[in-house]
Image (tube, rainbow, N blue to C red; front, side):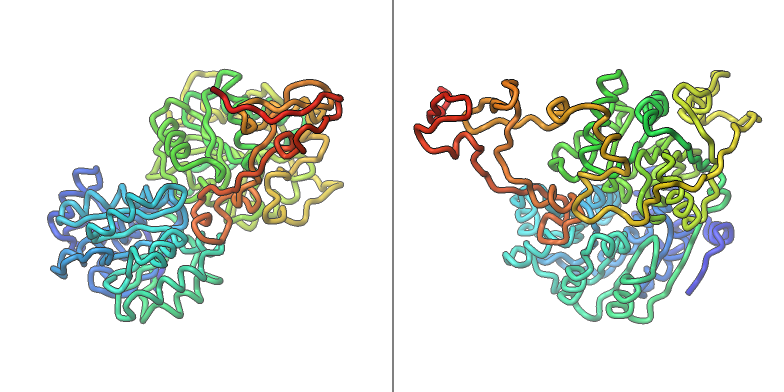
Length: 537
């Protein structure tokens, strides 16, 4: 195992050509603005080009995609082999469809430089185009485990010709329960093929995967890049539960890109709507969105049409959007790994960033334990809505300077200690119930409103006749769901470890609403006769 000194790794390699990378790939990298290798790239590429099995451990955003993308393309180009229909020659397994798209965007220019083809396969979309691409022959397949197993089961794809296999974000696949599928897929690749595994951690279940599916693997570990850790300022803001909404709005009122993390899909959707209504353009990203909606929202955030993205942990891995200045943990994560991956969305490629965690008194102990486990010593401060510190963290200090401007000496805000809480949360929310828990009490979630007052927070649903259902309790219009909860809604979106829905696909069977299921000619509670709804003309 090699533990890297980042400064020495950078000094060893002045450029990709010195690492043995073919010139067409070097020129393709230069066209995308990549001239010098990052430390993890400088360390792993020579071993990968030599055909060795390689394990790379580095934090999110350190350049792992290029670290394995370059050797994959170089190996296929050097082999001179010919691609056959439905039989890719290289396989990259990733945990989410967003990461699959990102990896494809990074590798495709390199593949084209060597006259190679690249495609993706993931759930949440129709498989027609994926099948057509495989049938036409593809060199590099970037896939999520669930959809790939389906394609293999339908005999649209075979892994018998795979020369190089890459596991990207292996620890995230372990967290989502994908490792059994990953093992089955690796067993379908030739035993003598090259294996590369890149991950933020190489312990636990990932270590078992390494022992079973790699041979004499060379391990390179990189914790931080030179002078990178100080570029992230970590803050924990102690707040009253009643002030939370106003404080979130203060933090989101920035002209820079801001990423807010919530624990639940409903919370992300609701907060994005509230911010947009208040004049802060915001979009949401979570497992209940279709693939098209995810792509549109990410595009809006990337281009700056919406400067705030409200997301669940689905966005904590693999989503690279440049110049995210502020990350806010609206709901603190349950464990330190999630905190690190969420926080890794800012301060990428040497940029400066701020990470803020909001903690109510009931959450203070858990947040203290989490930051300690993450090796982070945050600045702890008690704040109220409108405090000057909030505008400073949002990048809008009173002196008019921006967050990315040279720092000046500003008197620190009074520090607050993590006071012991009378109510201590000692366990994370149960899997599959994340839509009902967000770290707050029941009264806080209601915000003082009755159940019917909160109807407008729900997604609009109509019955089969195209009409909004009637609420018999108070005579008001009420939206009536015409579907059962999908698998993702029951099990927490992309965390469902079965079939395509492991990749975040949507599902659900139609179920008639209460009115259409009633007996013909029966009477409802108001005494009016029911009749079958006519189809709209």
